[in-house]
Each structure stands twice: as C-alpha cells, then as structure tokens.
Amino acid sequence: MQRKQTQTILTNNAGDTMPWTNDEGKADIYYEVEGSGPPIVFIHPPGMGHVTFRGQKDGLAVDCTVITPDLRGNGKSGTDERELSMQIVAEDVIRVLDDCGVDKAYVCGYSNGGSVVQEMAINYPDRVRGIIIIGGFPEVNSFLLRNEFKLGIWAASNKLMGLISNVLATAHEKRTENRKELAEYVKKVTPEFLEEYYRMGLSYKATDRLGKIVCPLLLVYGQRDDYVHHYRHLFEKYITGEVTMILVGNVAHQIPTKKVHAFNQIIKEFVKENEQLPSIP
Image (cartoon, rainbow, N blue to C red):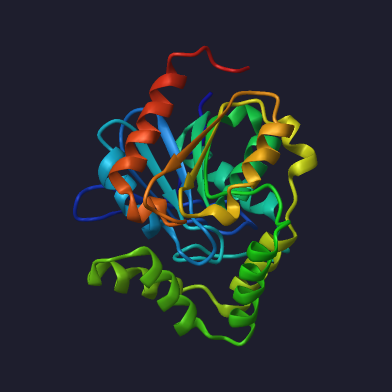
C-alpha cells in the first residue's frame, strides 16, 4: 500500500531525515527516522520528547528502522484545535507511519507512552505488528501511581517547569550534556499542555478493551519498579493473545536510559522472534 510522504523534510549533519507530518487542520508532528529494517516507533512519556530514546536510536538503527516522534505539543511538534485525548495522540502516530510509508510497525511506549501504544493496538490492529510497553499500565488504580500523577498535575498547574525538567532529567540521565539536553527539551512543552497530558494519563483506562489487542505484547519492568509490577496481571488477564513479561535487574523505571544495552537486546530478540511468525491479518 503506497502512502503519501511528508512535504516538510530537513536533514541533519548525519543525513538522517527530520520531517513533520503535514495534514490540513491537524497538528504537525515532528519525528526522526534512522536505520533500516523492521520499523519500530518509540513513544515517550509526557514532556520528554524523542530525545528520551537516543540510546535506542544509536543501538538499534543497524538492525531496525527507528522512528522517534515528539507527541503533539511536546518538543518540536505542534497542536491543533482538537481537545487532547489518547485517541487523537494515537492517531498522530498513525499519521507519522503514513508519512514514513510504513504500513505496519512495532510500537514501543515508555511509562504513560505505553497508554498511547495500547490505544494504537486497540484501534489500529492492522497497523501494529507487535507492542512493547515499558513500566506500563492499562489504568491507574494504585495509590503510589495515582499520587505520582497528582504530583505532576500540581507542579504543572503551578508552572514549575524548572522543577519538572530537572527532576526528569536527573532521574534519567547520568551524563551532564544528556541531562541538560533533556531538561531543555522538557521545557519546550507549556505547563498548561503538560498538565492536560498528566490529567489524561490519570483518567485513561483501557482494561476493559484489552481483549481487542491481537498482536504480541512484551511487558518490560524494572526489578526495582515494584509499584507498577501488579499491572502486568491486568494485561495477562484481559489479553487473549501472546503476552511476555521481562524484569530488568538493578533498575527502577528508567529502563530506556539507564539500561540501554540490555533493553536494546530485549527489543532485538522480540522483533527477531516475531519476524519469523506469520503476519496477523
């Protein structure tokens, strides 16, 4: 199936494409594409942007086509007049796939980015080859996670973007230059829009629709991220298809940045195994 290509394309010094989607009346979504092979789209948590996955871009581009968008209102992506919803954000990612000429991709979501991935797998099963969810949940039903969202809402509503950006950057990056880049990237989202994202994540619920997910699912949790471990039981209970769970040792929530090599190997194995299976119609 031939799909349209983006009308706005830039190139960085390495020659990698850096385009935006261009659909009339809809937000222009910025994304980067590197590598070749089976396509994988990486979905970041609110505020953090595509720079969250620098380790995956560097480590997977030899074997896979790595697609890293900025979600609407984050980073270099725009917005439109529509009210923010998980369905619209999922549609944005589908538009990125259309721009890339990709019919079907693996989709990986980190933390609340995993909710976008679930929405894609539920509403666009023909576009998703398999999904990877890192530290994810189909709903927020625990005291600790609920309070984490409420803390983010409070900080964003009080326009404490310096605090939010420093907390996220310090938690995820060890190297000073990476930490600084992530902190500056977080500040690109307005506090009002970040608050909307947090409220959307807190209220999102996919549990009763998980049975619609037909593609293989890989759940990845940090061994020390025990306050979200129980969510795997909801996925295993309601999804009738293949569900695999991996615990990554010596890490809490920040697997993509703190356990880059191990996580990349997990992704490679998941893709390799599923590329040998017949496609799900």
